[in-house]
Structure formats: C-alpha cells, structure tokens
Amino acid sequence: MLDRFIKSSEFLKLGWLIAALVSGCGLVESRPTPPPSPLPTATIQPTATAIPTPAYPWTDENAVLNGICFEAALDAAGQVFVLRRPEDLLNLYDLADNSQLCRHPVTRQPFDFAEGRVLAGLWSAGRGCTAHHEVLSIERDDSARTLTIHLRLITDGACAYELVRPFWIGMDRVSDFTIDLKLIN
Image 1 (cartoon, rainbow, N blue to C red):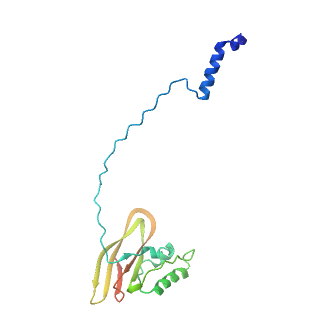
Image 2: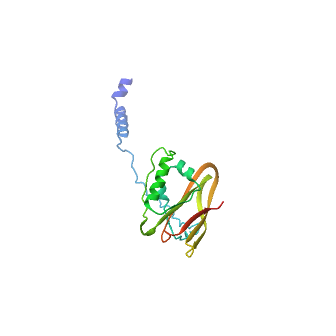
C-alpha cells in the first residue's frame, strides 16, 4: 500500500510542495512591509542654566605635573611650590624620581617660563569619591609685590578613597612677587 502511495501523484505533489518551501521559493504571496512610522521627536529642554566659569588671572597647568605618580604627589601634599625657571621644574621632577616612591621615572612636561611666567602649585590630599579645589579669594598687592590665593579642597561622597588633587597654575607678570597658596580647611 505504501508503494502505491509513493508512486501516486499525490505523493509527488507533496514532495514538490515540501521542496519549494524548504528551498525558499514562495508559494505564499509576500506583501511589502510598510515602513516604520517615525518616532515622535521631543524637544530637549535644559534642566539647568550653565554657570560661567570665573575668569582667573592664570592658566590651568595641571597637565604639566600629570607625570608625577600618586605616591610622590601624596608625599608632597600640602607643600607649596613656586617655580620661576626651567631648572626649578627639572629639580621638582628629580625630587620625585629620587624619592623612589614612583615605580617608573616621572614623565616630564615642559612649561614656558618665557617673559617671566611662573608655575605655582600644590597637591591636596583628602578622602571621598571625588575632590576639587575652590578658590576662596585672591589677594594681589602690587606695591608689596605679593600674591596670595586662598583655596579649599572639597571632597564629595562617602567613598573611602584616598585622593590627591593637583592645583597648578601658570601666571604672567608676577615673577618678582612673593606667591603663596593657602589651603583653608
């Protein structure tokens, strides 16, 4: 009986149908898929007004001292450095290298001391998730030739991370000034 079914035309039709479906020939009429409807566009409104950064009479020079490792910066935290010549910067790099606190020699970056530019800074240590310096006041006395900058280290978050934050600035027209950075707690 099976032999007769295999030889019958019904079996052959079924075979062709299966072959057509498996091979991907469509016996079913395909309809084009409509394009997706566009998503509604939303206008993003600012949630806060940008506060302009105050203009200070210096340039941010943190990148010049980026090559000093964490351990050496932590060891120097709280000390104020006022560098007036390229040799002063090289001596600071040598001091970090000779401390043997860094696993590798520090990466040395140049600073342009031309026309009496001064590089001044410090590292501050604290605990938290993040830290930044806030400038509290700037006192410049041209007759006494002094410049004092009062800073505060602000740490945020309840993390127990030991943090070291640099504050290094480049200044013009103060090469003969006494410069002091005072860290206020």
